[in-house]
Image (cartoon, rainbow, N blue to C red; front, side, top):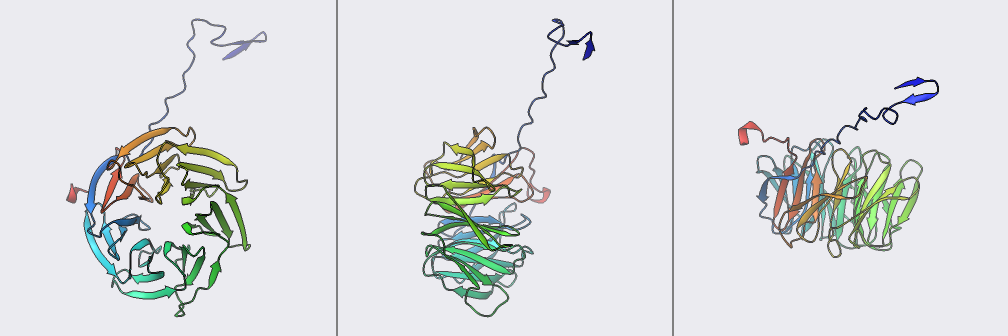
Length: 333
């Protein structure tokens, strides 16, 4: 573009010139292709979780068991038993050598992966324990319960009592996530709470409807929260301002989980109508709607930490989805 005698010469002044078009938007890489499913033989699968490096996953069963799988090979590695009732959640330590689990028996358990033995059994919650997470160093287990409290348990201590209790919630704790310096929790009382471990402060945002799932974006600047009014909300951590609202799925009765894809540019959620929904993060429009099993609840999902791969749970099965570029390893294709 050349400036001559104060006139900018461009497409507007040269009718024969073609205006340059913006390059087409790259197609997002989303885990939208069903690769296979695994019948876990655990009754209803309450939760599915990738481990830290994504090579294995954990399933929590209605039959009181936890199972460790290689999901690509559809191979059962080990089964862990010791809970008295349903296992509701599990998490892997950062070195994948230990597992934390919780369930309807009010207990939190700390397992050795290789031997399958219980290292510690923590008791103190007054009701069902819904969710469990390790801290960044995997030295402390955090658990959230229907007794409205979050409890911290020292993995290295032989004492069975909690080292800290956070009981600000007015109803059941439904979701937990732990970053390097914050604990994020969601509650049926309609509030998400952030506990800053550096300065010992607590900040809450009132969503106004029972929370079923909450998580940080990868940069830690926003939270994504799913609620019982069929809505997922993206909030700014610093201001509490709502940046996005995602609807179209059904979440009014069950504990439906939501997540972000690997690049943090799409919101993904289960639904009570048997589908997985995917929204563009910025435009808030549904870009994919994947049928898993019609009119069945898709409640739990887990995103691979490094690949565009996703696991979802429905009834007694887990389903593995991947993007268009995914290839099964040669020895199991």
